[in-house]
Amino acid sequence: MFGIYSRLRRVFHKPRPYRSIAIECTDRCNLLCVTCPRLSYDYKPRDLTMEAFKKLVPALKNYDNVDLTGWGEPMLHKQVYDMIRISHKQGCTAGFITNATLLDDKRGRKLLEAEINWMFVSIDGADPGTFSSIRVGGDLGKVIKNVRHFVKLREEYRTPTYNGPFLSTTFTMNRANFEEVPEFVALASDVGFDQIHIKNQDVVSKKEDIEQILFPFSDDQPAIPYDELESKFAQARLIAQELGARLLLPTFEYGTIDICNPMQQGGTYVAATGDVSPCVNLGHPTPRMMPDGSTIENSGLSFGNINEDPYETIWNNPEWGKFRDEFNNGIVPKACEGCQLLRKSEFHLTEGVETKTADLKSVPA
Ligand SMILES: C[S@@+](CC[C@H](N)C(=O)[O-])C[C@H]1O[C@@H](n2cnc3c(N)ncnc32)[C@H](O)[C@@H]1O
Ligand code: SF4
Image (cartoon, rainbow, N blue to C red):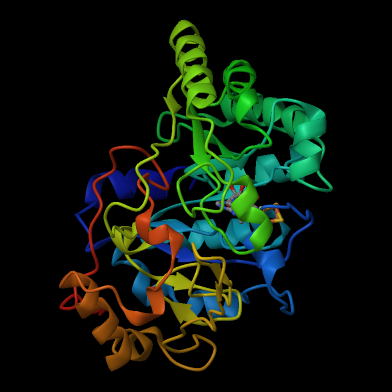
């Protein structure tokens, strides 16, 4: 059976209405990253049940990809491997973003046996001290050791039909770590990542975030060190070129146009609670800092809960239809006011992926 779904996917794959569905398999986490929006509100951590995941199966044929990430650590969910397999059976690729603290030999093999298609590893520093000051509870040495081992395992599991997962880093850049970007590019390339993705800390959910972010947001924020950033980016580009590494650097053109990255991907987010929302920010009551220093208390936006209703009923909720309709007509829905992701100018999964805006007429069968 090994590789059969990859083969079938290639032979029978037809374009689907949407690029990706985000299904948060858990909102539990083993780290306390200072940047993390999940620490800006109170909640009771939980896993998405397999029963709830299975109720999403009829919807999956409308998406190319299943992203098992949310505000939590996907590798804490014991059945994440089954979720990947089920996604494959519906013709989707599947993967997640991880802190890789749990990526040991046993779990690495289980992911490869499930034929995971992509994995992004979050590493926010090249220096162990910087890393631990941001990824509180994490250890850079351990993460690097885990990924180096996984890169070797990936070779072992490669077959003519399964090439192993596309492996990227994701470095959430802010004032505390941007100077380490060139050093990080050298490190990540040596570890064997296929891609080095440097992105902005772009979710601003508490006052302290305004001190840290590196994109124009408020008159009260410290001046952005553009010259130093330019110089570090130039060094990073040079190192990437010399090492033949694929490097994605963030742009600084924030706040120009309303483009919502989650809506471009498909605008579907299922939280670990089972609540179905358009995106991660509305799937949780993540507060939103505003440029004038005020806070929008976001109560979240759920169109239904998969534990209670079939997906089709939720999809056909007139309120969700109205939300999609507004987006399709260039109107920013009220619930999106102040969202930083709306002005995000970089892609979540891979650069250059063709993305689609949700279409009101496409209803899951
Ligand atoms: C919330 S985490 C969940 C997955 C996993 N626990 C991890 O850390 O990779 C998903 C991604 O969001 C990033 N992130 C954390 N805080 C952020 C912020 N304020 N703005 C943008 N991205 C952030 C993380 O670094 C990580 O790459
Ligand atoms: S590891 Fe991921 S989910 Fe956990 S606190 Fe850090 S950023 Fe948040």
